[in-house]
Length: 249
Image (tube, rainbow, N blue to C red; front, side):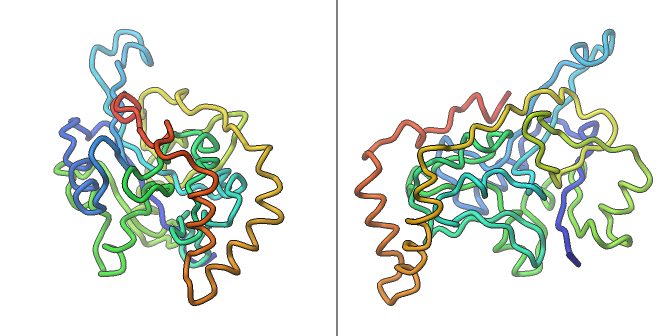
């Protein structure tokens, strides 16, 4: 892979101003009460006794090199872009089943309250297409976040990792090789949870998934996916509501 987009975060620079969260919400039209990114507040005493200060740990979808969410998706709506290494969601293929949500160790996914499809950070794909940085990176007043091509040794992210020790947040039972790296001490690293992979949806993965893709390929674009949503999803599934505390731990 010639390109691997990644983010390097220096938690020691974060003030918890939440400018990154506000910018992301505006740029990506995220519904009220839902978030594509977050800032976790961690008491340093929990990490280094006697530290006496807080660490604020920014985060978002880790755009993993081994994404478990892809394995959990029954229709192929979640996929890894081989051109730049990002993990993306094709909304026309997504049936909103929610199987990918618990498959993410980081809780980075949610069901979009208005569109009723899976949603998450995509490194601001629309902004990148216009030659701009992700909104959270451009907005951060302390430059706690850096963004670029990890495969390019001359990129800012590659230089930062070469000069500094870094940490990946990895759940031991659900290794994903995340492409968000933290410099120095990021605070608590044990909060990712073990991924919950679906079993009942094996049929969808092997049979219905290709059928949905065929439907989407016809002129009645998305008809198959929309039909599946109406047949198999309740009007107000509980997963539609992303817990507020999940975004602000």
